[in-house]
Image (cartoon, rainbow, N blue to C red; front, side, top):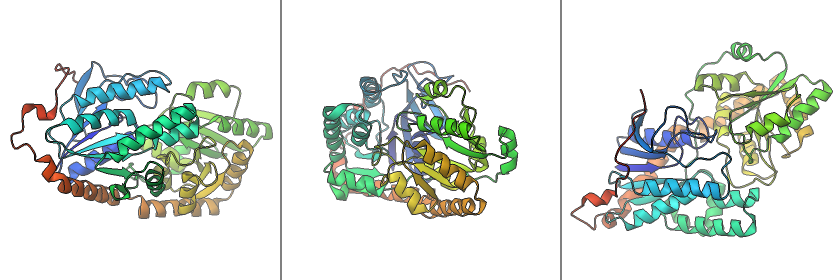
Length: 433
């Protein structure tokens, strides 16, 4: 089967959606499919084009997968119209690139507006491929739950997302609660919606915790690690507050914020003089796993009001690390449900710095309970979040929609050169090797 995947994020971006898009491409190629990817230059979570990527577009190969990269219109702190411009710009350029005559076109959302533009192009193609939208975050809920665009903006986003998803041949979501929202609120036909859980994308390694604690300069204190994006959704100001409270108590604890994001500089500014807070730049995969294993507690931190819009991708790696998890999140949120289902940690209210500090000290001081919660997370990861299970379910979903739609895709028995679209920017820039 010929599959083209179009998404704004791809490796070597270390976090967020990129590792899953890459994992899907590599997994399908492992099944023998002819896979092509259209993506952007690496830019997330720093919101700056990575070093070594120049020009307007280039061909790349990552782990055997062929990628056409398009330079995105990236600005610092993209929100509102800036985010819309980024997505539409990428969407139009991806729409008028070669798709390699796919049987199935997989569009990754976010980016929703890029997906909408590409979907229009797909519907106008003479030999139309089946269109699958892979929903990693529910865009309209994100706008509503963060209050980013007000009530009217949220209503507009809901209308756009509903139309995009209802016009897809298949929608794949990463959680059952996503499926419920799509069916009940966005009016998507339940027959067209499949659930495929995200998986742990890191290759397991054996880690000596003490070696890594020494490497990072961590002593006998309880180390609480938050790994991943530092953005508005994570609301990490409460972690700064918890560390400041720990300073006042003289508590034997260290909070570590590992990663990057558009709120990192502001957080560092607000944390000046706080001794029990450390910022770490992104690490290699091996050191990243070492850091998670060496920590005493792993933290998921969410802004109050975040309930349905996203499943934190870091949880798959957290569970595999076999460390207890604290979820600072609203009661009843998807994150809270995941921690409860895995029995891998505890929940405290979002934004409650004192509760976060108390929970971290309690779990960090109980080695037996910590070990049990960590084991529970690993069991859940192996049982529910297996990469083999995810790839098999994805392959089955794509094969079924391709087979079902094959008569429609064969309307033209004389495919022309235009079936793949118009290739723009013919001069391609090569990434130095």
